[in-house]
Amino acid sequence: MESFEKLMSSFNSIIWSTPLVAICLYAGIYFSIRMKFPQLRLFKDMAHLLVHGEKSETGISPFQAFAATVGSRVGMGNIAGVATAIFFGGPGAIFWMWCIAFLGSGSAFVESSLAQAYKVKTDSGEYLGGPAYFIERGLKCKPYAMLFAIATVLGPGILMPGLHINSIASTYEEAFGLNMVAVGFVFCAVFALVICGGIKRIGKVAELMAPVMCVIYVALAIGVIGLNITRVPAMFQLIFSSAFGLHQIFGGIIGSAISWGVKRGIYSNEAGQGSGAIVSAAAECSHPAKQGLVQAFSVYIDTLIVCTASALIILLTGTYNTVGADGKTMLAENVPGLQYGIRWAQTALSKQYGSWAGKLLAIIIIMFVFTSLMGYYYEAESNLRYLFKDKKGIQWIMRVVFLISAFSGVLVNGEIIWTMGDTGAGMMAWLNIVAIILLSKKGFALLKDYEEQKKQGKDPAFDPKKFGIDDTTGVWDKYNKN
Image 1 (spheres, rainbow, N blue to C red):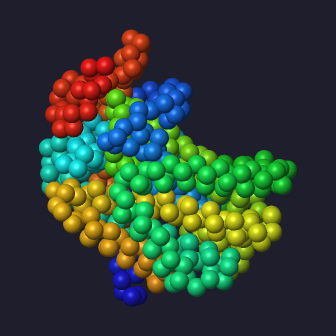
Image 2: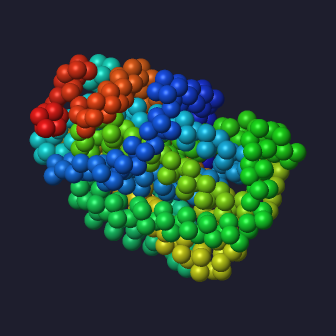
Image 3: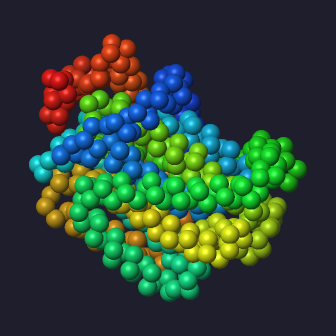
């Protein structure tokens, strides 16, 4: 086991080296500038499309796709991931998480629009798409597409699920004294009932759970702000000074602040990773840019709202530690011996409200984990179906493998489980971010076409022939006839 941990750590350090951080920042800046910052200009469109998107018997609605991707994004990355960023990068890591969210929304638009434009329709009537499909059809490079599909099966399908089960089981052990293995078994059994219903059931469950869990959690954070209102200005000063190396304690780890902020930001909001694009392809809308804008909005919800809520809960209550660049020297040790992760938020809420708040968080965590794993499962399944041409029985194989991978989280220590999750996300990010840069002109053209039709007073409709794309779905004709 020790040799496996060393191997995973070494591989993860290569995956998440400075070049990946740099290319993710570059892509976000490049896309935002070229598209004239649609994340600001078209904010009104984002909100409108979220509520008034098309509904379909064939696919899922844009809101269901939004809920499914928010559900998959809003999970351990938003709570335990924020804690990890603060532990290794200091409070300044939060600023860089905000930056990658703002810039990453541009990446989210491009990848999700491309996923819609190049999606396919299966014999069973579902829509499938994502990076594997637009790499094969747009870049005409099937080996590259297959490599992404394999990375997605390995990442969300095998390496990443265990982290979430580990977090929920440890949370319930802390809150209620329940056995971790028993919690993991019960959770996986209930989860199996949902994923066996396919993307339709996943979309419906996410549509119900995602808004509820976000509202409750943010409400708890607002309460913490109210109870510590006089400390809020100093906390933001701490975040900004640490982010730029100006703080006397955290100034020496500015590199770690940037690296961990970007790393945890991408792990949380998944912008540029390709996962949101996979779910986006399952939705039906009249123009790819519509789903792109909805998914750009989901990045805001994930990082600028939910991750910030976690940061406020942890920092305002002083429930955090920060390690130096050497990984040994403690720069700040406010809660000695308390392992970074979900228990920081749990302890912080219990301090502020009493033990009941820690138990409430445990309940909320069920929803966080449930929706995250629904997204992970669908991402892995759709790419396995791509690799094996949707052969009969392949979905059941993925379901069994996924449930085993998820349950293994209660049998492995938290350190290696985070490393495995990071590795899975990093592999996808490398492959997807290069692909969407290569296909960026097509993404920009989709936005331009959408805006031109809007100026003409039309409800934008996509004509794939105009972009040199073969329509394999038949859905676009319906909207062009209207």
